[in-house]
Length: 173
Image (tube, rainbow, N blue to C red):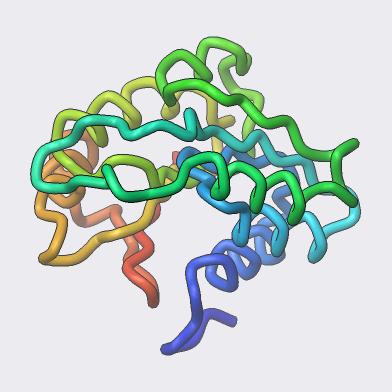
């Protein structure tokens, strides 16, 4: 059951458990905390982890000071024990989506760049990859990132957008 105070990976866990979902794409996996959590929680899960491990230009945010080599090493270390059930796509989101068949995913979680243009492109690229009855979701549904809310509102009737703790949003396809 989803409860106040949960972290995003716990929210995703509950959505996966409730719906018997096991095939996931995490767009913007960073150091792999969410990926590791989901892989450890479901022995029959498979995660497509997408991250270019470079500074992607986006409006209103700068990550020039991030150590992308250390972030990637953190991801590799966290997911090492699950390497048969995770595929790292070290590329930009839209490019990675071209490697996934339409309707292949139970759930996609978009948590990469947070500006309107990038989120808009991510939703365009990843929505077809989710099977009917699956979930398109993301992070940072809050006032700090109005581009996320605008892009979601462009694609979906807000009456069908659910929000959860830790700024998670989702729409059932």
